[in-house]
Image 1 (spheres, rainbow, N blue to C red):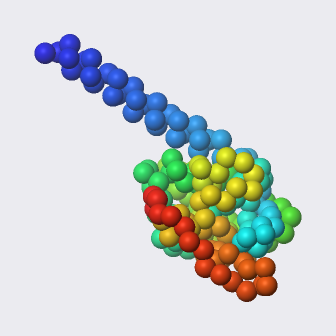
Image 2: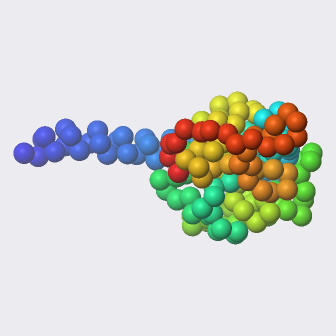
Length: 170
């Protein structure tokens, strides 16, 4: 009786440990001693925030100013943009320094905020400038240089058009 429990339990335990380790590694890779927030021009969404490595930054519509509600089930897909220790985030090209700040997450890590709202990187964005998380589950949006969520594509004429986005995880 004990051998089958070990035979099935041990692989499940190892899979859980590896999953947590992968999530921690993904989050750790987003730590920067003094992370930079800068802007990038997007032909589809206008001027949006990106990380120091050019990865698109997002806001979660369910967050409140100064409060992240993206917890353990959310973080592997939407890792918070963090700074190490007590480092301060810096404003790169086009970003406004007075809009930058940090909040303390439940695990003690400092997450970067812009206009008071927590910033995230989408794990599905594999290269700088990718914006595949835009409109995800109607809760995740790229962030403008003013700190607002960009919920619509910018039309070539300067107006706005709505964009369709398939659902997913929120």
